[in-house]
Structures are given as C-alpha cells and as structure tokens.
Image 1 (cartoon, rainbow, N blue to C red):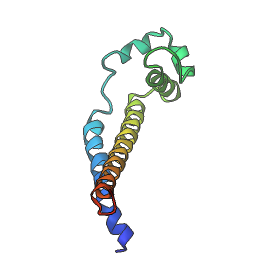
Image 2 (tube, rainbow, N blue to C red; image 1 turned 180 degrees about the vertical axis):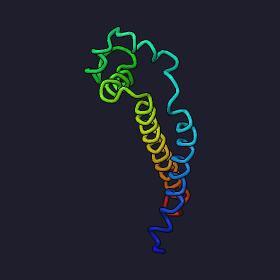
Image 3 (tube, rainbow, N blue to C red; image 1 turned 135 degrees about the horizontal axis):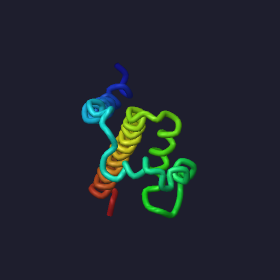
Length: 119
C-alpha cells in the first residue's frame, strides 16, 4: 500500500459509509407515491413550465424542474427517487469534502500560529 493510498483510505471509507447510509434510507422506498407538495405537479398546473425551465425566480424551480423532467422522460416514481438519491449523495459528499478542507485549513493555521517563527 502506497502512502497516498493509506492517506486516502479513511476518506474512501467515509465516502462509502455515506453512500451506504443514503442507499439504506432511500432504496426501500423507491416505489412510494409522491409526498408533501410534489403531488400538485401531477395536476397540470405549470407542469410544462417546470419541465422546460431549470432555473427561475420562483421558489423551488430547480427541484420542480428535475421532478417534471424525469416525469416526462420516464414517468416512473423509481426514476424520481434514484435521481433524488444521486443529488443527495452529491451534496453529502461535497459537504464532507468542504468540512474536511475547512478543518485541514484550520489545523494548518493553528500550527503556523504556534510555530516559533511566528511572532
């Protein structure tokens, strides 16, 4: 095992744990019906707008876009859940990386501040 591999191993394990936990939460419920306020999208009110506009000034336009677009492309709730899982995983892994980088920078700043060369 190389030094780089040994250094990356804890992060790979953490990423695998994040993926495993997210999949354990999402996969059993792939076929569940729409919940909360997503059911209104099936009513037809602004459905074509949301299916063709990924960005806008209204609230929740990007999530409604993905919902409407996936409905047009696939029409299956499982596809909605898988796309949602992918977005949640991407956000979780990006947050993990951000927190890691912030903690590493804070540690380096602390070491620099405590060094004898620092006046």
